[in-house]
Image (tube, rainbow, N blue to C red; front, side, top):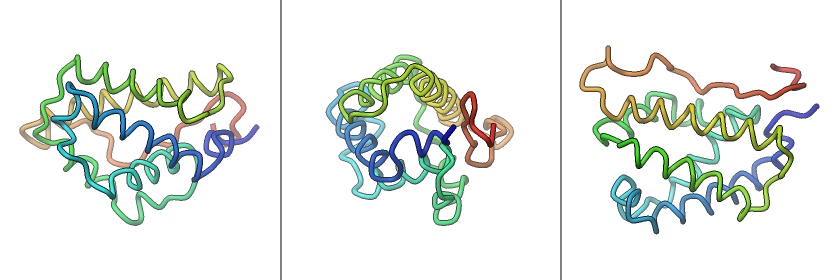
Length: 149
């Protein structure tokens, strides 16, 4: 069975997904304040993170590092409603971007996004390092049958 990265269609497919998703959060009145007017490099960063999480190249870790992810979320004070909207828009972007529709893939992506959104929310409220989520590296997300799982 292929990795999630391979099943998703690799870098180009994930970039398409992240672009669709990013466009949706920038247009969403609840999430836009967290993202501001947007940054051109953000889609590339999202793509690198998702690709690495799904078993693709480790470019996010090499070029940015996980500390970058912690830093960009600190102080945002993400609400439950914003977290839930983020998850909903990401899952909707799967369809718009033409990602695979099989249930094992969709379930793995759903779990990945829900987990990541909880980590980001926790880090967004941390006023000290001790309050941060203990995760300090890009998680390798697998699914049933993945040789790395």
